[in-house]
Amino acid sequence: MILCCGEALIDMITEPTVSGAQGYVPHSGGAIFNTAIALGRLGAPVGMLTGLSSDMFGEQLADTLKASHVETSHVITSDRPTTLAFVKLVEGHASYNFVDENTAGRMLQPEDMPDQLPAISTLYLGGISLACEPCADAYAALLSHHGTDRAVMLDPNIRPGFIQDQTRYRTRLNAMIAQTDILKVSDEDLDWIIPGPETHAEKVPLLLQAGPAVVIVTRGSQGASGYLCDGSETTIPVKAVQVVDTVGAGDTFNAGVLAELHRSGHLTKPGLRDLTKESLRAALALGADVAAVTVSRAGANPPWAHEL
Image 1: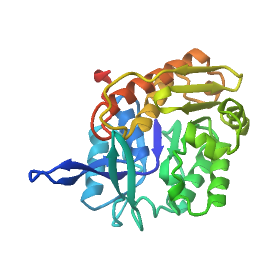
Image 2: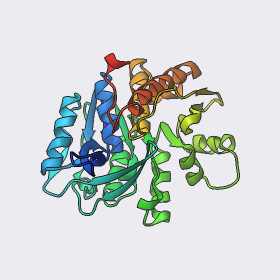
Image 3: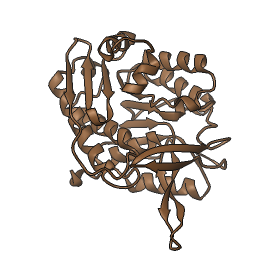
Image 4: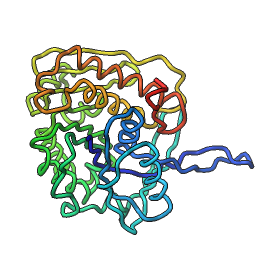
């Protein structure tokens, strides 16, 4: 089973009210949550490890997980509030304003992490959960404890506005990258992790040397590229669709990648070290297919397998 470890929150997205004014509608979301939902809808075995509130929004998130066939035995429930992300859309592109103090997800501690994960073969981590403390330390501890003999995918999805101590964040992120098998970054993430005038082609080998077997770089409308330790690479274009908004696009792309690697039997540490360019391309292609459906409709609403 793939265990998605990180934030689950409510995206408050504007919609017209009956009076004509703009109101906010609560949509289940969060980068790691979106990936879990997408994996469940694609038919991959998936569970979620996160902190959920017992409030009405937490109940909404739990119901959405179950409806999309995401296993919830590792969810940690408390009476703290749910994180809210108020979303502003400009020509389909989202910016966020978060309400995240003392929330059920953010306040997870290292001691809250499970000692045993007997049915879990893969860990997926990333998002704002790696920047907001104390939960960032909790997920880092989880990876250190359980990542040695499991495949690991990491998407830092770096949001500089969440980083209060850049040195501390870089130290934690670099340590997690060293324990990662698949590192997925945007072109902006890549330039943040490795600042400087070097080209992306020059920076990617530095990431591979840090530990990952596979590095995936997404470039928005320019598609995505995958790189292997043997120096081979492959690039896929973005599918042409009518974009409604980009909420959850990268998250569902990641789900497509994980689902295809699981289907093809490569989602293990040895399997990813032996991954071929053709198998990587197939994974990127499914990621692009899934993301294309997501951006064609409002909110993070990943497709079911039959919709592909």
